[in-house]
Length: 284
Length: 272
Image (cartoon, rainbow over all chains, first blue to last red; front, side, top):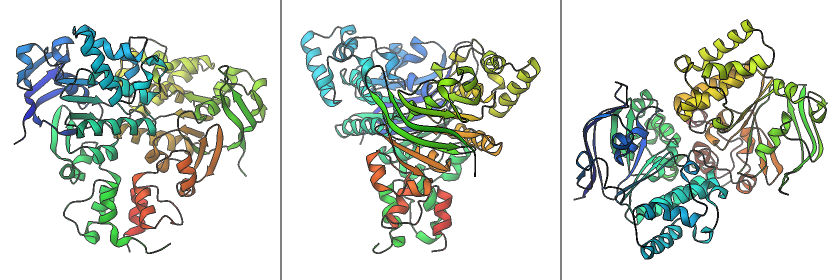
């Protein structure tokens, strides 16, 4: 039996001085080791949800709320959003805007300094995080002179140094070129394989389908679907009605379902290659 | 024969840092072209388009805009003909309300009050941004900022519209709207030049793709041809859309033309 690490119980949220529920009675549970993709159109509530999971909302940035979020057994209502930085960390879309230090090394150390880690422990964690993120030979570089992909990896390293059990990436790849994007997906896959729980918000449906095992679809602050990726992407019409598309190969397979004959439509290119094998030409 | 509106002749550009971003590019862009320029970061995409409106001047070689050398034209005249939407809307937006932002360019180009109002009303309607007209643009979320930055250039209807990574951060409805705008501009005789890493979008929204790699144009042609050139794609580190890759696999790498969308794929395979 898997252990729940995030429990969201009937949680609603409205920003300060507004009545509109950006999140409306949201309930779901994420278990340790899950890799969850959160998808949905803009303003569906994705970022609000991510910021609520780390306690930034409502406790630091304000707003009214109802319900409860429990992180690794701790109710954020009771801790007032504090006490979970070593359990759950978030990486934002625009990594550059979060940097304050002159070197990569100082940037990774920054949060640990603030939490009063010992020098020895900091050294150890800097080496661990920079190694994991492929920044070991860039420790003396300026964060502002790194490429987009390297900056995202640095933002991830800053979080990793705190060794949280859960990492949230909020559109962390949308500003990157394909090489930078693959760097980030590659790193995240490794962290997941090593036991981390990962939550990823991304508009790139094909990549989400390739990497995650569970998908949560948000629309107008409500959870529309939360299930295994393979199951969620079968529901093309329902997703389309909520402004979310399915991977191209899934779309094609569902349209040719009568000819192909399958239980579940493929959601990745590799799966599609075997489902469509009957169409493959022999020779050149 | 369509009119050639932008021509680069042996265009070389070396930045003050000593980096040569363009190494002798010869390119012709025709009226009503719907072009995407693709290639990895640092390949010279942004550098080349910034020569089209005179933001950058050649280190050697020439750039002709409507037949005239860009070093001999005023920057304001060129900006009127060639509109440029920056990749990062924060680099472009400078007014304190969205309405001012949209009015800025038309007013600068000498539109009358009435013409300005008409132009702004049109893009507001088209891009569905009525509700944010009195908002400070920098307080908007990224996507809406992006839409405002496109609208502010669209307002004065330049002959050539350059879009630098227009789909970054856009969701599905945003992409559908962008497509509608591009199609409308093309229908009205304008020219679109898009820089993009988003191959799904490029495949479905270009008549011509220019592939750049290390300061040179390494391929130039229809998307149906470009996505078959495995060697160039590998060199330029471009990954074709998923559906294109599936078709390539089923054809053992040798279809006659690349499939560019799911609907093309269905048309091709539904009767097999």
